[in-house]
Structure formats: C-alpha cells, structure tokens
View 1 (spheres, one colour):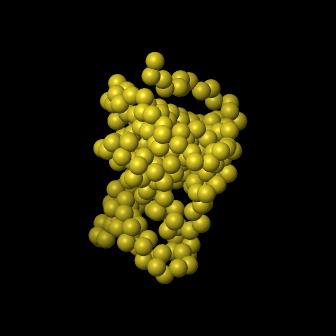
View 2 (cartoon, rainbow, N blue to C red; view 1 turned 90 degrees about the horizontal axis):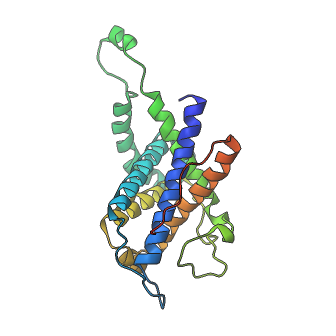
View 3 (cartoon, helix red, strand yellow; view 1 turned 135 degrees about the vertical axis):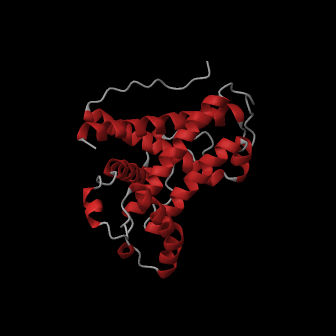
Length: 237
C-alpha cells in the first residue's frame, strides 16, 4: 500500500464511521423512545440503505479483528486467564487467516516452487493493520471526547460524556470490545432498535461512541492531510 492509498483508506474508514454514526443517530431519534421521550416514527424508508451501511461496518470490523490477530503477541499478555482467552479466540483465527493470506509455512518438499511463488498478499495485511490501529486509537480516545461533540440521543448526564467508558488496557480487553462491536452491528441489522435501547443500552452506547469518535478523529486528521471531504450528511427529508 503506497502512501496515497493509505491516506485514502484512512479517509474512507472515517467516512464509513461518520455515516454509521448518522444512521444510528437518526434511527434512535425517529424509531425509539427512552423514559418519557416519545417515539416520532416507526418507519424511516431507509431500511435497505441501513442494511448496506451496516454491512460495510461489519466488513470494517472484520478487518479490525484480523488486524488485531496480526498484531497480538503473547509477550503482551501478563495474565494466564487472559492468555487462555486469547488462545481460544485468536489462534484458531490466526491459523485460518495466515493460510488465506499465504503467510502459513508450507510443509512440503517443493522448496524451489515455494521460492518462485508470488509474495503473500501484504497489501491486505496493511489494510487490516491500519483498520485495527484506527480502532484502537478511537477506543482509547472515546472517554475523552468533549461533551459538545457527543451526539448520542439518550445520554443520562448533562452535559453528555463518555468518561465512564473505560479504555481497554490489555489485549484481552481490546478483543472483548471488538467482539462487542461486531455483535452489536449484527444485532442492529437483525433486531429491533427499540429492544436494543431497552436491553443493550450500554453496548449500544459504546458502539455509537466508537463510531462517533472514529469519525471525528478521522475528520480531524483528514484536514491535516489536505483531503477534501465529499460526503454529505444523511437526512430523512
């Protein structure tokens, strides 16, 4: 991946995060209620577009997970229980991923053929590591997001804050947060948003905050890169 390709992948991830945040914000405002707040509408007319955007978010999170698998080292894990958790979750993933990317060693006698074979698909590896790096930065910055930049509709604090959401401080916690994001996006695609507000409020808020933080950080860095933003905000009308 050359420098220009990396910048534009960075920008595209930021735009996806922003679109996902807007989608969730509109859905929460128009299709849910919490406490005494009244639901405005149960139909948005955007269901097909919602599925497309959320599928793109799932694809991005799959790259984040694969980037995590490529990055994690046993030397980073101090706790035996956490190491066991990572072995169960990661090593099986790594076996499949390394084979798919062409990184797994071949155990045959055709040494000459191996030397003449094409190099592994390092382009995809770089994409996964960039996706993972952006996700980790967003998870770390999430508790520090200024209140004026928080748009989650159902914040209990005034002014709103994400300060109660802890930063992941170990490989196991990072993986747990990635899995929660994957699960929540899948539930957003297949479930009722009102049910998620009522039963998975914490996970929904953390997911919303992750995409919101990702979008804001990417937007800030995009301006530094001098890349013009083409995307228009989502709107119902």
